[in-house]
Length: 469
Image (cartoon, rainbow, N blue to C red; front, side):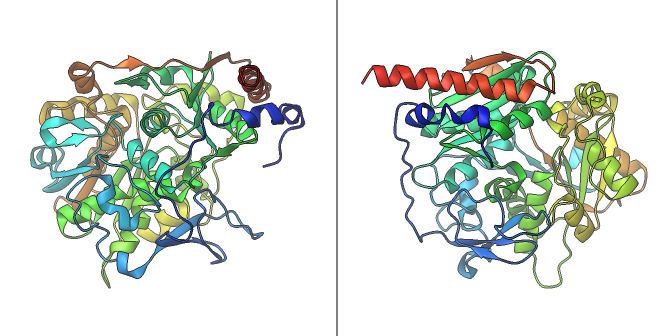
């Protein structure tokens, strides 16, 4: 990315403090030891991964890179000797190192819940905190899966990863990076702080920038686009990062292991659609000859449902990526983590392609239905779930009532987050301290203003570091 001129003058000092006063070096990374190749979905160009590549270097339509794993790792996706956890699936993860003790998804048959909504073969992939079920994701959502996979993909001396978030992704990266001292710069709107509570304070190498006022997740993305141009910083990449997609795809790997086959239908609430794309890519790697890919049902929360509108109305990219008039709509959904103005809909290998290949659909439900579904899950299963998971359950129940899903269909419902209330009762959690809080001046000047303040803050830190030498 081209660096904005107003940032260039600060480069030298910022570079000196890029790793928070320490040299961040990841153990276990050696050139030429990766068990996979990254391949362009458009032109087929192949790359030996450096842990940071997000795009193909050739000129063509926007297209995702995808991973191709060595054939001897390809059959089961399970590491010999690993009985549980995320890195049980390391053979089908784009990682150069693994981290000990990282939990994974927990998949179980939900017979009682299925009966309540009219399904005989409903399975749930629970991603969150539920001790009795064996679920122990530290920040209570499936974003922990992507965070640890992205960190495991990094080179030995990583840059500062710049990550925008509505809250869940930031929490996952903040805690994973704190535990393993990986430098990150996180940008979130103020409501995200509600989800940023941890068993211990964040490490100083994790810098949290909070946008106060009416800023949204889309505004955090716009700020991160500029901040990733700072020296020593690098965009984490979101859906473009193969680590994210393959990490989230472990939900499908765990489900196939539990079911002994792929599900017929996969249901998940989506903002960008990254998790559903990852599940589809994982299913493509696992399916046996002649086996049908799971039908993807992606679920959105009205009134802000750009993927639903694009899929149902035009088949083109969402038509309102940056209109100020949509700011209010972005604040209305119960599940704000699902609000993304720039989902990868028309990108080769993106949402439209995986929906088409799987014979899938995009569903939409409202806040009232999502709240009722959250209450139903807690009543039947005995654990609280996040609003996004409520959206998925509500949309699934509506699809069953409408006859779009057979009663005997083998359905996997991804509960993308849950157990937050239970965790807060069981554990003492500490609110995260922002590194910088910025009053949001509005969409026109906001990103540039935030980038200037962050650059100034880093310059000041560098000057203090230099003076202390």
